Length: 476
Image 1: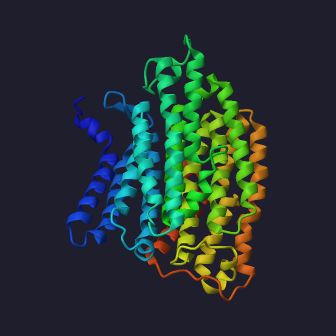
Image 2: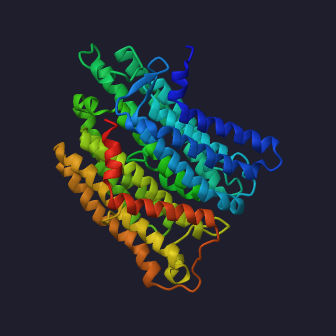
Image 3: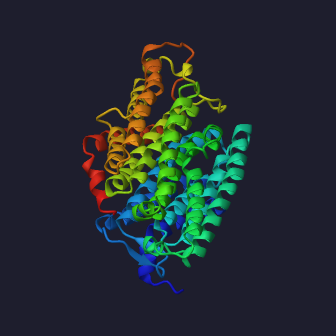
């Protein structure tokens, strides 16, 4: 295949991010002060990718490039925006954090850029092979980033667990691709729903889709493939956890929206019902186990399992309302979780020991700004209006009700009430308890700026949700 200029322009954001990652590696290796230059390059590359993806947000029609293997249009551009925002927030949070926690940072920022490149490739995929390449590029970067704090046993353990379990899940995904190819005769996702009708081997297709679903459920951290989440999120450097839990989760959900599009789920009611049960159990298990946590980071890890269930409710809906709700939720969840983990990175001790609820007691008196920002993220994660987290849950549950999965929406609402206990518990501890030996935030201006940006965005999208809804409506 000889790519044309049109093909190359279609993947301009991907080329910019991947090219910047290569330049960052070269700068770190060749330039004397390359390590100081790497984060600046990362910010510039991600900002440029956002600028190049914005014009396509006004193009609702999906078009093909590279012989039909890559798709362009509003859907791809919207998700590219989500991934780049996640990467930007993570880079800003990391600039001072990595200097203090892990002085020999080397290729850290290049790995973030390569992970974002993989995410963009996943969202751009119109072929299962291309999707697999993007997934592996993202996953390999995450395996290294999770163990980046090489001097800590918890970080090494996190990387090893993530690598072993991730490789196992990748096997399911690859075998699923093989079975889908055997059933349909193609790995192309263009016109995929139409090719699934009238097959001579429908069970082969069903088995392939089931294996693909298992691989994606591992990546989003849903029950029953969630056991890696708390250990990996807790052991990885906190800024890496912020990136994995936002951009990585959004990329995996892009796979659900692309492969398990509404026509596919409607044609396969058994898989749709299984996905509904997975969504419900994820919401229940994530929220119930989070109640017992004393570590803030581990609480947020179990919370992310519950949020995977919330987002899956929109996928199960298999209608425009649910799909639009998923896109809205992905952007707002990126802001919520990046901000919440960003606060943890500001409060964390240099030795990397886990931040507990008790250590946060009286934070409102030691640092009113950080306490207020933390409260914004906790309220939004709990779904308290008028913050964007409330509307994210509302739209995915509304899609589920419209699809006659009212019981799933009821489970989601009840579990949201349960989640309010442990989210608001942190706020109560910060404002109404006292601990003279409690933690104070580190002086990291760029990290604090990233947290403030996330809080402002959450408030803005909550007051004006139509901004994201309008963009999401163009994607389907």
